[in-house]
Length: 149
Image (tube, rainbow, N blue to C red):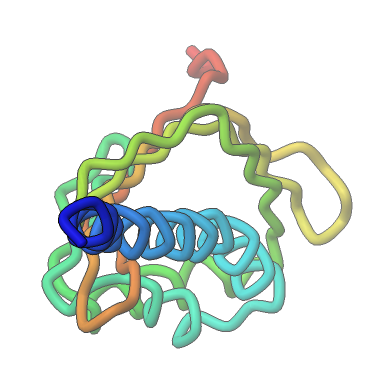
């Protein structure tokens, strides 16, 4: 009886770890879909769908520009940027999970509607879990292209 109780107690104590591991796996899988979703909505020219990936208090940090605060301002920023018909290719290099927060580091290539190379560089995204969904809270990128004198 005592042995059965011990086995039951150990199994019961291990259950939360199993549930947390499954939650972590689900959260990681959902997070890995953020970049392909961003790329697809960006390339479709859908500024509202791009902005929906950000937290309501999210912030963009564009190069050589003031921060863009809040989802409404982020949507307006992306709407203006998408008017040119440019497309983006995003490549995730690293992801870091920190419980209800995560970070992603990657590279981007911007192509014009005519197929011309517009820009390339690196980005860093900070995510947080909001009501069960990953949302971007901070988005910063920089160009690797040398400025023209």
